[in-house]
Length: 104
Image 1: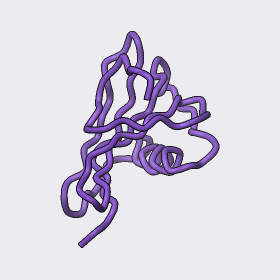
Image 2: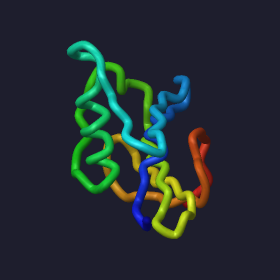
Image 3: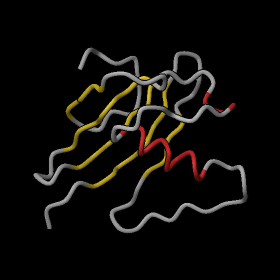
Image 4: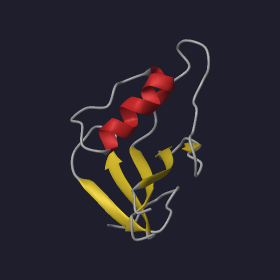
């Protein structure tokens, strides 16, 4: 079946450790108590697919770039990048989960 598949959502910054969530080949269930970031993950995916703004939460401090890893219908692995403050997207070949990033 040809479809676009989410691989990972990763946030990177200069002086912080990368924060990442991996999406499995089947259904990924995200669960946890209130105020632990479940809704932020959904908002971040929406942001990486074109929404204008990413919700500001204290845990986002220090992160400058969001990375969304995708498998294209062709089977090719790519990674979208976007500054957490918005703006244009970058596109990288392969599964990119760390910086610093070369120009896309």
